[in-house]
Amino acid sequence: MAAPRNEFAQYCCDLLSAAGPCLARRMFGGYGISSDGLTLALLVDLGDGEKLWLKADESSRPVFEAAGCARFTYLAKGQAKSMNYYSAPDDAMESTQLMAPWARLALEAALKAHQSKPVVRRAAKTKTKAPSKSRSGVKAG
Image (cartoon, rainbow, N blue to C red):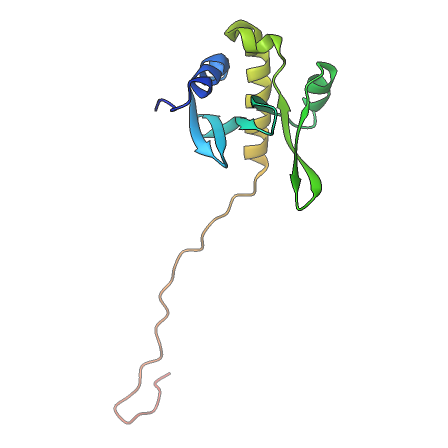
């Protein structure tokens, strides 16, 4: 695992270890935290300090909301936009044991999001031959 330059990013990777080995990479002025290629969290400062945001989906959203977690919301061209990420519960930021169920929820949401993406398959390249010309200049068929 490559070590992030930010100590808080490293701490968050350690906290999320219940989801597997995590890697933090610079992304949009913050960090994307992934495990096995699946982005399960973001580390972003939306104006009130760096905060860990965990991936959510339709089934986990009520769990995050019941715990009082804030939804990731930002302004774009003067309009509020949101993403399926929620702030980590404050108490979960204290230990890997308290973060473990939240890390698993985030990993499940990331896995579902990955599985729901359509598979893009590239068509095999086939070489098409131009019809050959006979010596007389007339196409052979």
